[in-house]
Image (cartoon, rainbow, N blue to C red):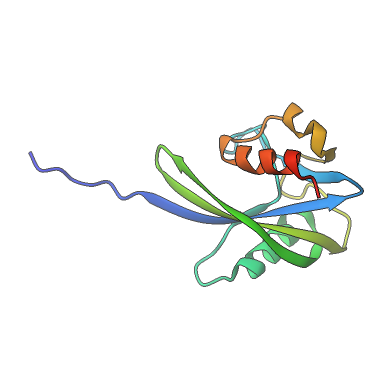
Length: 137
């Protein structure tokens, strides 16, 4: 019997931490998505050859209908799933233009850091939640 390796899926995604008046913008995933019904910070998968900043700008325009500014690196996360690995880059940013709308989400909410744990997030987000709870600004 020869052992065949199944290729491991590797994804790269950007996460936006958008804070306004002590509250963070979170989005609820559609029920039919993976982790359906969970809340998450906006962002998404980086396309091949795309810079992290370009990815974040594109994703927030598509998901929320907003333009962003003041993009600052805020850390990295890596999470293993049964079928692969996702590497996240996290950025703090501000909305430059537009009012967030749930264009590609079930709902949006502005949530104070102290209440983030009341929302169900995918397991990959736990380290980010811990960090925001410890140091909200």
